[in-house]
Image (tube, rainbow, N blue to C red; front, side):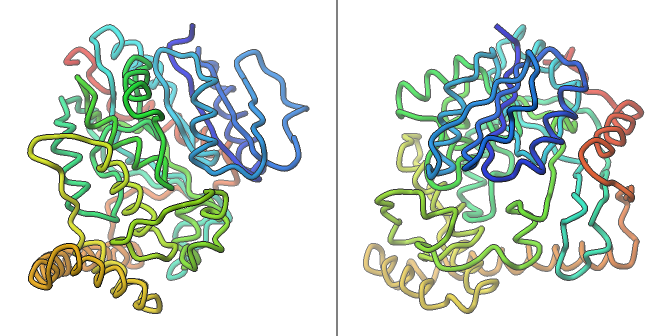
Length: 385
């Protein structure tokens, strides 16, 4: 049994997945690489490697089903899901081995290195990112993570993402923990965004978790990815006619989540559905005002759907409760938005401290840059695990 199963669910994105798989296999690490591809045609026939396992589920299934099917084919002691446009650092195998020795069930990594594919086009500043690797400072620090506190933070910033929760997607999770979660909840992945749903269950049940400030996983942002579509302003639209949502048969949308397709509504819905599965004391309450503020600020053309969700909130709670959560959420969201503006200005004026490496043509050249960068940087001190 391998120490680590690296799992890549994909759909009609062979142009990214092929280079990612080849770059990872070229590292020569002792891992099992599972690719679960729901594409209409099979492009993997020409790629054969003893460490590569290609799974071909039925086409037309949801991304959540694909994640769960892919998981069922992974045999490693630890599992790490990545996107088909992401990369890994070779150090992830040593981290998994040390985590196993010390009984660590889940690991969260920071993401100080990001790889932007050549087709990634940011709507406000495309030339700054396309075909680049960006490197932020990192320390290699290893610390114990309070997973329950991380879950409460994510719920308090509903619609914004995973934050510091330990995760299966771009993190490490022990098979023993996965088996406990599946036994209690039926599946690790759920909602309509498998990463945030599973992170909430992992944060609830993990007995020992770590936070490591090290780029064991290098996030990739391609033009067809969620990050790429969001940056280009295309990741929003009607819910039921969306290609991501359509495969979810008989989807019962949450009445308090605005019913349109966007990053905050998809993440918000998935986290809320996970919280419905969880029993903690005190209970974890989502901050609905933060979600509504995002929808009203960034997706104003869908205001009717947001107001409909707010009316449902009033029916369940009260007008006073809506006013309180909306004021709190709006103040926090405006502060966050100002931080994003400062970041964009610093990038445009080239005053950011991040290192920008241009001329990246694909995953192979990105992997070379990333490997060289990590080799020269700080390593995680696993002796403190």
